[in-house]
Amino acid sequence: MRGERALWQLGSAFTAAVIVVLIGITLTAVPGVGATETGFDQLLHERLTPTALLIASGIGVLLEPAGGLAILVAIGAVVWWRSDRVAAMQFVGIAGVSWVSVEPVKLLVHRSRPVLSGVHHAVESWSYPSGHVALVTALVLGLVAVTHGKARAQVASIGTVVVIVVATSRLALGVHYPTDVLAAIVWTSAVWVVVRHIALTWTRASQTPTRRGPTAVAGLRPRSLVGKARDR
Image (tube, rainbow, N blue to C red; front, side, top):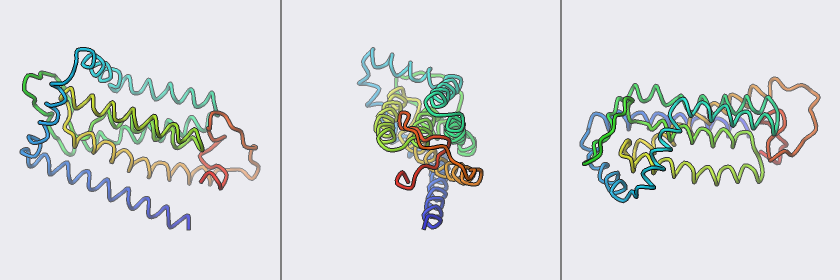
């Protein structure tokens, strides 16, 4: 039963990833579709207050690759402190791979950034999918992978809000189309399913017969992603 569920999840993730790529290629080939999306960006941008603009710009700078890497390592250190080294490595590996996996898609799709009236920005990378949104999505899903129970629910709830805030900030700044941020969420989630499955398989295979007793430290699983049956 577990094997069938895993196959279904992996199949769904693969299908979602293929759809994301096909949609991206189509959007690049038919730029007129993107022109209809910019209206939403323009609407958000025109309603930005000076304070909101400052916050959105700050989010953009903070979540650049260097900042994203620092955040990834910092959260990994906290996971190590609250749980153990294995959980920290699992978080960094799962979140890191899920995040950077958007780069090949950017290079494959080659979608240019949106052009908004009265908005001037210099962004050197491609637009689809959004790297900033992929980063925060990966961080949230990475934490979901190494937490359980109430802590996992809290991470999922707060993380959803964070992802929405970051996605909205990217649209309001006019650096992404709505489909860019949606693609980032779907793609990152699909890759997360695959990477988490690999991590689970590796953990089960490497487990020794003697396990350390369960501990409850901020909802983090001791030693591995594999918890008691009731946590599955």
